[in-house]
Image 1 (cartoon, rainbow, N blue to C red):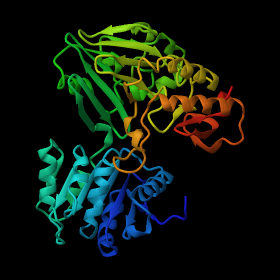
Image 2 (cartoon, helix red, strand yellow):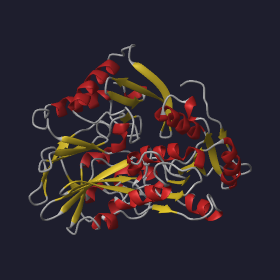
Image 3 (cartoon, rainbow, N blue to C red):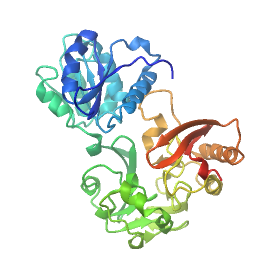
Length: 435
C-alpha cells in the first residue's frame, strides 16, 4: 500500500471501544471529534477525498488503520458532515455490510447507490447545503423498499441522544434477509456471515446459522410456517453457533475429528455433540417435499465439510469449502493438508457437467464483492475457481517459488500464515499444511 493518508485520533484515557469514519470539512471535524473520543471511539477523518484514487482504495486504508488499533469491527460507524454528505451516503450504501450505523447531515446527488443501505441503521438530518435529493427524500426512498432502520431526524445534528443511539448499534444483532426466488432466502448476519433457508412443501431446511447474538429461530419462523431443520456445511462457530435451537440437525460425522478445545473456544456455552446429529455423507438426500437437497463431500477446510445441492432451485450451498470469493482458510486448528484439499477439489470437479448451470452460495457471500456492494471486484464461486484451485494446490505442493506469498498472522495458530493466490483462487495457509 502507498503512504498512508489517514490519521487515527484515539480517545484519551479510555480504551478503544469502537471506530468511526468521519467525512467532514476540517471545521466540521473539529466539532465532531471531541464527541467521538469522549465515547471511546477511534476516529479517522476524510476531509479531502481527492487524495484517493477511488472509494475502494480509500476504504481499504480506513479498514487497515482501524485494524491496527484492534478496533471492534462489529462496531464500525460512519458520520457524514454536511460538506461531504454525498460521499457519506455513497459509502453507506456500498459498505452497509461493514458499517453498524451512521448519522449523515444532508442529502445526496444520486439516489440509486443509497438504496443498498436498506438494512443499515441510519439517522439523517436536513443539513444546510442542499443536494438534488434531500435527506428526507433519501430516507423515504429507503423506507419504501422496506427499511425499518432509517429515520429522518428533526433535531440538532449529533446531539447526545444521537450519539447514544449510534454507539448502541452493533453488527452482532443485525441481519439482512434477501428473497432470492420462491422458496429460497439468503440471510446475511453481522459483517460477513451468510446462511440460507430452503422451503419445500412439507418442511424447510436452514443451511448454517451464522453467529449473531440472540436466537436465530424467531427470524426464520418469520419467513416460513413449516417445520425447520438445520443442515451444517461444517462445524465452525460462524456456521453453527445456534445449533442448540434446532431439534433435527444434519452434519457429517467426520466433523467429530475437529479439536473440541478449538470448537468450544469458538462457541463457548454451546452444546456440541456430534452423536446427536443426523449423519450425512456423499449421496445422501434430504427430502423437503417437492424439493430434494443432495449432499456432496467437500473436505479440506474441515474433515467433514459438505456441499448441499438444491436441485429444485438449481443452486448449491458450499459453506467455506472453497471460500466465498476471497480464499479458503487453511490456517486454523483442524484443517486438513493441501494435498487433501486438492483431492477434494478434483473430486468435486467431476460434477462440473451435472451442475454447470447451478448458482453457488458460499458461507460469506459478501466476499464475492470484496465485502463491498459497489466496485470492480467480483469473484463469484464457480467451477472455474475450482480449476484455479487445482493449479494453486499443485504449485504449493511443488514449492513453486513464483507463487505469490504474503506472510501474516491470525489468532488461532502460532505459525506464520501465508496468503497465496493463483488467478481466481486464493488461500490462507501455514507451511505445516503444505504436504
